[in-house]
Image (cartoon, rainbow, N blue to C red; front, side, top):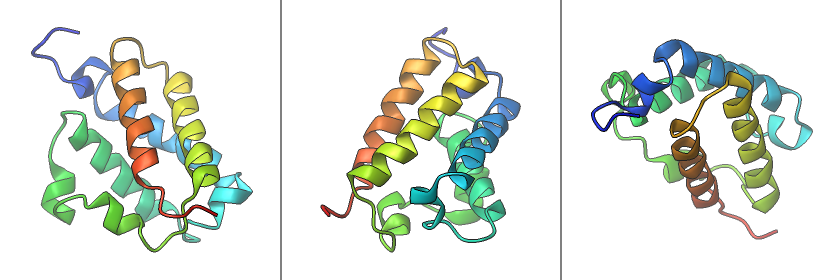
Length: 126
């Protein structure tokens, strides 16, 4: 990946992130542990995650324009997130990266971010 190219550009842009989020949410929808943490209508959450990931990985800044600072810990605070929830969420996201076919070095960059972010969301030691 050339130094001047963002992860967003190197993986193919918006379409790749749309596929990533679609795959991830399809897995969440089937996961009894995680599904209860999400609202009945997954559409708004999918769109927010898509916009956030696009922006975070170097694409257009629509997320910030629409929703402001991500404040991920605050936005996730109402939900009980323990090690099991973290592991399930991360497993689905890493599977999405593989399913979409994201290649190195973007693959490692994205995996590293998601591992760190998932751990940072833990707010319960059940």
